[in-house]
Every structure is written in structure tokens, then in C-alpha cells.
Length: 242
Image (cartoon, rainbow, N blue to C red; front, side):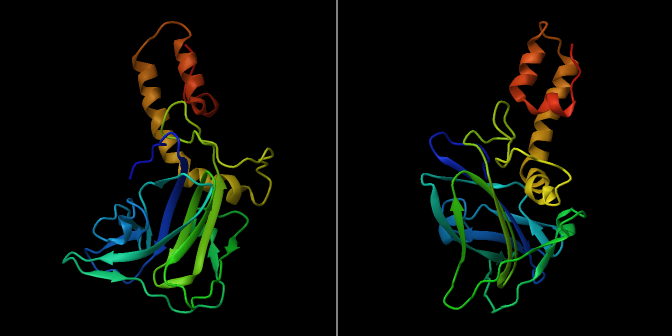
């Protein structure tokens, strides 16, 4: 799934995580729903495949880009297991009225807050998962196969020139002015979304530029302009001035 911003549309990136222990060897876990990327409800056409990186936790390798022409919209989807023989198993939701806790340690964070409350939603009359999206944003969904109620969803605003894997594009998440690392919510508000949506992609871009910087000698001051254009490289100290 492309992660590049298409001019004129509003960028929305989704990172899907799903706990699924009922998968058999060779099964694929997909997100199927509205829109071309999600297959327009056709499991065989969906391009959003999750990988069992830490079974039973499945994750998308890269965030999924969806472009919207409206500021407010609703995405409907489900998780589907597709077998090697082409068989399809759609998730079926069981009532789960009690809210549970998602340890942030499961997502690689050990400091406060230790956990966040998960939303509890009535399953009666609900067929599909529904995600309310507002404006330019990135969204993290951590869910459990066959359970509608036990979900964790967080949304962070981004700029309309979003593109952490592209030089000159924004990698800024959130609009807060005071990002104090002593704030107990700092991990959740800033470091968690940066780890999920920025770190790998921005790091790959900076790594390539760093190698070029050491191999290619340009006119005095040109690398400074290049690094300033990228932005992140100067602050993260991957370059030394020439």
C-alpha cells in the first residue's frame, strides 16, 4: 500500500494491530472493508495484510494510506483469515461488555502510563467495525479477532504535507507546543505515534542521505541546504558539517 501523499486529498494513515491466535499455518490475516486498498469488501482484492511479528499479535508492515476528500468520515472494516486453499473466515463478534486494559508494554513502552482503558462498545446490531476519522491524522488500532468490544484506538493530527519517508515532507505528529518528557502521558502522546508512524521510515531516509553525504562531496554549503530541506537530520545528529 502506498504511503505517499496525493495532492488535493486529505492524508489519513492507519496502523492495524490484531491479536489473533486462531490462525492456522499458512493463513493470511487481512483487513477488508470500504475502499480499493481494503478490497471493497473482497478479501482476495484487499492489499492490507498483517504479519505475525509477535504471534498472536499481527501487525501491518507499514501504515496504510487512505486519502479522503472530506474532513469527517467513517471507515467500516473487518479482519479476515484467508487460508492457503482460498478459504475465507470472517470474524464474528461475541458480546464482551467489560472494558479491559491494554498494557503499553505490549507496544514496547514500559514507563507510565502502564496501561490505557480500552473502549467497550455494544455489539447488538453492529455488523462491522467502525472507525470515525476526523481531518488529517494518523490512527493506531489495536484489536482482537472476533471481539468488537476490546479495542484500543488512538488518533493524532498531522499536517497536510505529511510524508516522513520523503525529503521536504512533514514528520510532525500532534500540535502540542509543550512536549515535556516528564509528562506521564509523553510516551502515549508523542513517542508512541512517532515509533509507529515515523521512526522506521524517517530513519531509512536519513540513513540513505548519510551514506551519500560521506561518499559524495558537493559544493560548499550545498549539503547544509539539503539537510535543512530534510529537517530531521540536523536535529538527530546523523551528519557532521562539511
